[in-house]
Image (cartoon, rainbow, N blue to C red; front, top):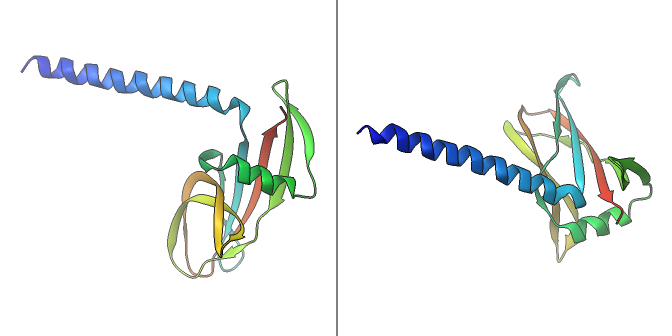
Length: 148
């Protein structure tokens, strides 16, 4: 029985250390990939700002389809960040009007349909927000693509 706390502490330390190394590996892996910032303004049916949400955690990405989409956008800037050059793309997505009560914690970028189905090329996670019927959301995307 005395060994149970030691076992639990050991497991806890392995989980914490493992999470740290996974986070470090994940961040070094993304240095040569896209960076995304999603900015969302959530307004009630009277047009008053209810919440402002930002998200930058990429949950899913199809880099080839995303690059194909970005190459079709009319304007891009070249910027330098941390000594590296990036193509910067910014656009505002269509506003959405909600017809029901719902809670959201992620947003998808979908491209034109292939065989009648929209393709998700990117999904970004953000803090959840709750909508009521008549609420609207405006989404602004910023994507940095490394220039290799």
